[in-house]
Length: 51
Image (cartoon, rainbow, N blue to C red; front, side, top):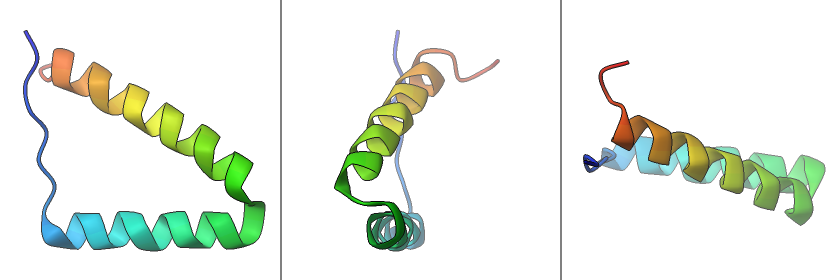
């Protein structure tokens, strides 16, 4: 069973700023790897929210 994860508007804005900074400093390939890992973490949290 998976739970949904919702972000506040402020959290979404912060994420966008972090992605922009990572892209400027490290490039698109790094951002792609970061987003893959981030999505994996979110998936694990949604499947096991009480751990």
